[in-house]
Structure formats: structure tokens, C-alpha cells
Length: 166
Image 1: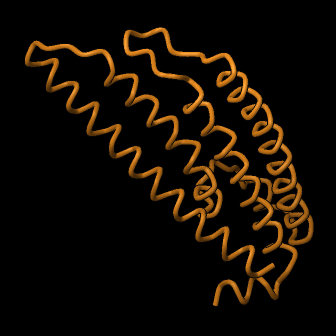
Image 2: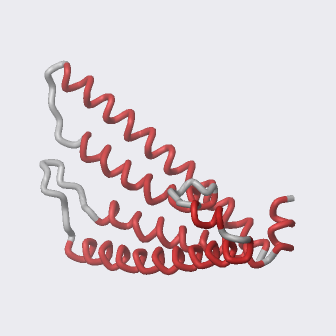
Image 3: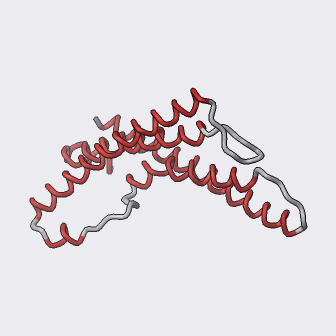
């Protein structure tokens, strides 16, 4: 299991780098769009591409955000609970998060496949296919599910946690 946790650690880092690159590209595109439109010109693709890249980066960064405990969480209850109930609550939230990300990943996969099969495009002048954007949803959510599994392994196995941290 240590190999799995280490592999997920590397995959999450790689996905975070990809998400950062996509977000940087979106920022550059939107800045260019503002400058270009300020000069009186107009194009039809840059805003939509910027939005696509931002949404893709959101889903692809999700596993890294879980790994680094960056998701929004309310720990008020667990802070006042004794150690055993607080740990039980933490495990419950890990399993609940796993179930939710698997469920949403399956829905996202169905959505992406349906969009691909229908050849759906956006309604803009540029009209790119929608499925590449939709495909990042199941990819990000399934990888977040895999990171939840790694978090559960770390929680249940003190030996793996100790070896991983060293």
C-alpha cells in the first residue's frame, strides 16, 4: 500500500502542475483579450477558451487540494470532540467524500460520453466541442477518489503513514 500512496502523491503533484499551467494560460489569454479589445479589435474564442481552461484546472487540481488539506472544511465539531469520536468523524468524512466523488465521477463520465457521442459544440461563433471540457470532470473526480483511498490507507495504517512521511 505504501507504493500506492507514493504513486498517488506523485500523480497529484503532476496534476497540480498541469492545472497550474492551464490556469496560467487562461490568465494570459484573458489579459491578452483585454488588451486586444482595448485596441478596438474583437475575436470570438479567447473568453471561452479561458473559461474552459479555468474549469479544467479546477477539476485537475482537486486531488492535490485534497492531499494538501486545501478543501474547505469545518473542524469546529472535531476540535471539541474527544480523540476517538473525532477520528471516527474524520474517517466518516473520508468515506463520504470517496462515495460522493465516485458518484459524481460516474455522472461526469456519462455526461462526457453523451456529449462526445452527440458531437455537441458550444453555441459560440468559435463552437469548440464540449466533450474535452466535460472529460476533465470524471478524470479529476476519479483521481480525487483515488486520493481519498490513499488518505484512508494513511489513516488506517500507522506503519504506512510513518514510512510515507519519512
